[in-house]
Amino acid sequence: MDINRTKIGVVGGGSWGTALANLLAGRGFKIDFWVFEEEVKTQIETERENRVFLAGCPLSENLFPSNDLKTVVADKEMVLVVVPSHLMRGVTATMSPFLSADTIVVSASKGIENKTHLTMSGVLAETLPQIPETQFAVLSGPSFAREVVRQVPTVVTVASKNRAVSTWVQEIFATPFFRVYTGEDVIGLELGGSVKNVIAIAAGIIDGLGLGLNTRAALITRGLVEMRRLGLRLGANPRTFTGSAGLGDLVLTCTGDLSRNHTVGRKIGEGMTLEQILGEMRMVAEGVKTAKSVYNLSRKLGTEMPISHEIYHILYDNVSPKEALHRLMTRDLKDELDEE
Ligand SMILES: NC(=O)C1=CN([C@@H]2O[C@H](COP(=O)(O)OP(=O)(O)OC[C@H]3O[C@@H](n4cnc5c(N)ncnc54)[C@H](O)[C@@H]3O)[C@@H](O)[C@H]2O)C=CC1
Ligand SMILES: O=C(CO)COP(=O)(O)O
Image 1 (tube, rainbow, N blue to C red):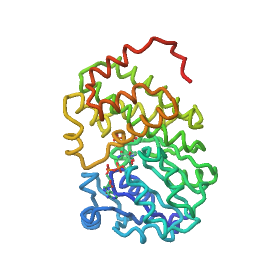
Image 2 (image 1 turned 180 degrees about the horizontal axis):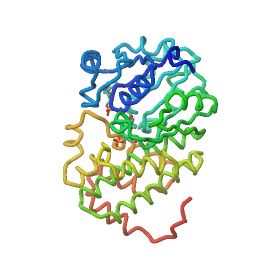
Image 3 (image 1 turned 90 degrees about the vertical axis):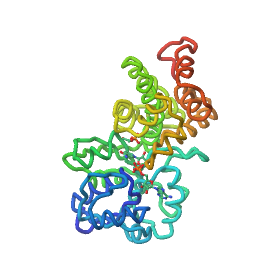
């Protein structure tokens, strides 16, 4: 791979898109970078900072921000998309006519679409029909944007149905501080990264209620069971859920204050309403929307996901966190390994 010649576009100038674009730019790639807001484009051009979504982090000179999708995605070997999951369909449908059929498309977004219950690779398959699914890859794992920009040692996984694609993408991203594993389980990786956001809201609620470390450990343990159950039902490899995009990301966001999902949960536990919390946020907490998808999808499939269901009821049915917790703790007693 020739760093001077490999043409890469990054679509999405939120905190994660900016951190990943900056990582690649720091490796020497010249990155065409689509950002939605004009103010973000101007800030990056003139101040080398994205003050809206990643304030205080100096950015590489190799980042070329633009508000024009065509410029960013046309004639590229790789396009990385990192937009919030509910915007994925609209943004990728808009860029579709400009994308050539041999481009490798990587998604680093986490979430399950509300209407279709598709993960992001499923949305890409619908909006980019000219691109074979074997050219899609997904990147996921425990990785707060702010820590990646600080070059804190981080491990993630890139999965593609085509081993040659995941290996190529691995080489594109890997640095001594950003270690990338490959995998083939695209759906497992995406479900891990999506369900963990719902469980992270629950972890925040536990902290907001002032509960203890026993409760958090219980949540991580049983949250992992739910994630794995849904994954098994949808054809994922169960081993994926003890990997970086499963247990790894679950632990990170259930314990890390930097998590937006955790923060939303904490504020709910402290008594704020969802409307108040979202009204104050310009960033996305994917678990809020994913909770709806997980609730409806798991009911349709008949998959037991009691914690995720209670989070849905807290967010959308005005159930109090204390009542939800009581219901969880007083469910029918059962065998621990009685899972599938
Ligand atoms: N921030 C992080 O540390 C990590 C985030 N992710 C995932 O990356 C994805 C993107 O999230 P972030 O980069 O954190 O975003 P963010 O929450 O920092 O920013 C929101 C993004 O939405 C964009 N946006 C708002 N309205 C828009 C519109 N109408 N059309 C197009 N774009 C619009 C903004 O430009 C901005 O890029 C999410 O799925 C998230 O779960 C994954 C790993 C780490
Ligand atoms: O997915 C993330 C880290 O891996 C970021 O989590 P939050 O979206 O909750 O901040």
